[in-house]
Length: 359
Image (cartoon, rainbow, N blue to C red; front, side):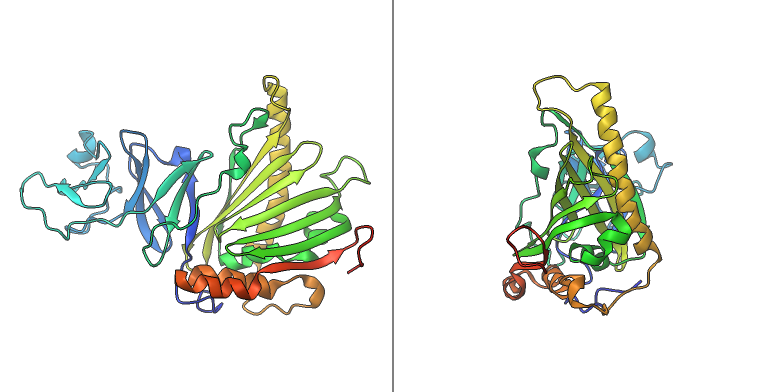
């Protein structure tokens, strides 16, 4: 395990961006403890159904807001009132802005009685939280995942928890440039094209190759556009016998420890008919094949030592550019344009398409 400072990423230990912190089922009317970004946090749903995330410890005397089952606050069903959460120790109640709005035994409420709060969205069956080490509001929209979630003809994904890895997020994002691992790890064959495009906070990987198991015929190509919108999650449009959409999320728990998830949506028909049980079974088979492919990466990350300085060769792919691009999220927001300007553009590692020069 290595830290952000050891990788030379910038001023902050944790990055700026939208991050997955759980599935929709993880947020309920019962406050639950979670830990991300080196912080103890609490997630809960208000009476409206909206999810919230707040700092875990009451500013009054330090009680954990969720780790309690015996307080009468909890037993009497007063733990969540409306959209507010009560401390199980003394009953202090905190609103969605984090400020204490009721103390059962006092009309005086100190201005310092305030919890840290975080922007949270529920989308595509997932709870997303905005993290910014400067405490600034989001400056980017959360992705809509191709607009496919809930779209007719598409089977919605299930979420695969892939483990807590003693790997820094940069080791995971390295894969965007890692041309060399696709044959031994993922079974790529008959390469046609591999390139990366750096576009401000977005990083794309363009891929066209055959595959040992994911193409129906030996002459077919697996064509993918894979991208990061910020540091926290990957998306990929995959064209094949059935079009699919992949999401891989990686969220820091501690500096150098990452929680990972995988999910896959599948287009099983054109939307002109009802989705059948057979369609859903087909989608599950695709999801499992995708999960197993990602598990090949996870096994490597779970067992490798930290790679602070890759011993890279030209045909490996642009690791250095990826790592420079990644730095923008670990430095003040106003430094991002300068970092982006140093990497923006298309980098082609291999191109064997007709009429193109062979890399």
